Amino acid sequence: MPGLFVLALLTLLASPLAQATSGPLSLTGSLYGFSAVALFLLAYALVMAEEQLHMRKSKPVLIAAGLIWTLIGWVYVQAGLPNEAEAAFRETLLEYSELLLFLLVAMTYINAMEERRVFDALRAWMVRKGFSYRQLFWLTGGLAFCISAVANNLTTAMLMCAVVLKVAEGDKRFIGLCCINIVIAANAGGTFSPFGDITTLMVWQAGRVGFDEFFALLVPALVNYLLPALIMSAFIKNRQPSSLEEDVWLKRGARRIIALFLFTVASAVACHALLQLPPVLGMMTGLGLLQFFGYYLRRSLPMSLERKRTRYARRGDWKKLEQLGSVVPFDVFTRIARSEWDTLLFFYGVVMCVGGLGFMGYLSLLSQTLYSGWDPAWANIVLGVISAVVDNIPVMFAVLSMEPDMSIGNWLLITLTAGVGGSLLSVGSAAGVALMGQARGIYTFAAHLRWAPVIALGYAASIAVHLWLNAGSFTAAG
Image (cartoon, rainbow, N blue to C red; front, side, top):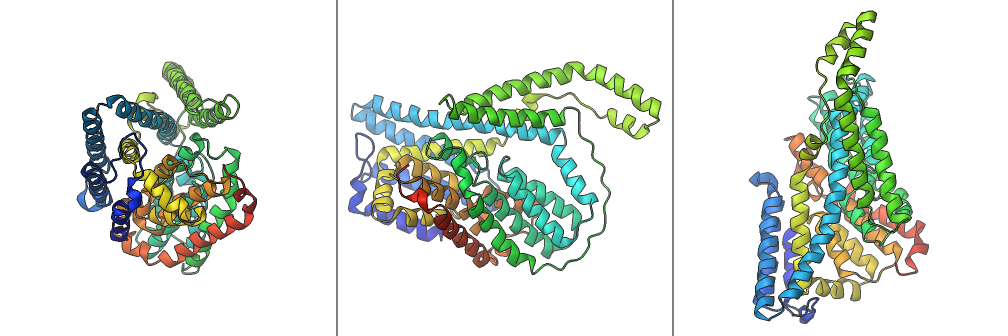
């Protein structure tokens, strides 16, 4: 499939439409343009081989972005138009910066909740309950679907995978099926919320879809998850795993950090909906609140420990007295340092690469080919399939940069297909790639590929449901 995509792209570049341009100079038919495309394809080939090369995916795209904009800068300086290239670069950088800060705050809160053992407590509860294999299959999938609407699908998938690996240790077939189910659920759950995925956040921040309009994708997303899950669950032997005991206690301030996160999300929504300001304003304000709360936790720690020591000693609760010895102060900057920096830098490289190719004129070319020659719905469906091979971030950024004149229904459609299309292959999403490493040798590319027809059935059904339920949203342009 990657070869077909590259062949199709090269065919487009050689076509007469390749004279389309976005900047003052047409570079799509020049050696500089072809060199830029070759750099991007080479970088992306290295990204797709991340698992085999054991090289972080941010490295090749960062270098490709630098070289592509170097080519642009050289051409525009020679043409006496350096200001145009500088302005285009700064505009692209501004788009990335807003998204970077938004994601950084969200990741910091997720890491803070992880450090306060919120996710460990959830996992321990599931382990203690002694669910059957079939119950565990549905529970991990359902939680992955729900949690990924507010947390990123990577964190959600890894949390659910950790539960399955612990409870069903040694049962490779069951673990493999659960991992496939978790990846599908996490990707589907991220499509009906602006906070569920980077692509939905991009669409919301670009103003293409309103905050409440995303929820129209809830039922299609559910269909995308439930249809494959129903079929796969029929192949699970309903056995009872051996019971495990795991006692996890929440660290001080955990519940209040959850409340602060919900308040921060509400602030971001209010900034965008009520004040017409970028959502990042609310998120950064929420980061400040988290910093103040971290300061309070540090300053009040000695007094809190003394009170608890006295209380537990009076009750003779020696186990909790032991736990107090492991209490550490909360430091928000440690949480920021643990953010997914490789993902954020990869995001920068992709945005700058696609922005550079767009300035050269290639996005205008693709826009004319896809959205002028085809029905927008078919174009969005095909782009969703492509996102199984090419990460959905560049796919969505390219569509937003093309600025096709589409209805709300079609903007929702590309949001849906770009999100769930990554489930078609294990390498099509961050969740799938992460789980291949976490359940190495159990959840593999080949194991996922065996269920590709079932996943494709869910993909097609979710599109059909969206076209049926939200038919009225396809009438007017967004």
